[in-house]
Image (cartoon, rainbow, N blue to C red; front, side):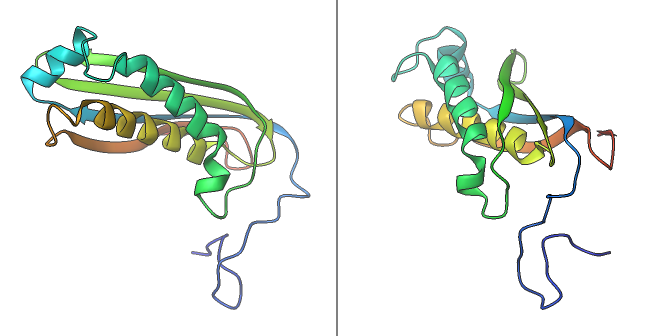
Length: 156
């Protein structure tokens, strides 16, 4: 298997996308935050010690998607056309599910932007609730699907 980000000299390189066509690209990613019952109820009821946890996490995730190339060295800067995060509270398990959707029209995909959005949203939830409980668990995180480009559609 040939790795696109490794040059013939074995060193990291940015992939040249100059000749690739512009296509519509979409990616969806997923992550979880597992909470104690008490902290879950604070989150659910909007009573976090630092304010509105879910709205802040959504904004953080959107901002993170837009800044992905500043965080991941070989990612191309992209003009994102859409970023959204959705939250689903799982009462029985005391779990917050996070799903991001990222879109662009470009020469390379938005998988890293979608994953970054979910992970930073989860980190923001942790940050906003850590004063109450530092044992909050983050993960798993994974790509759910991507569409566009030469490799077409991927669904987990």
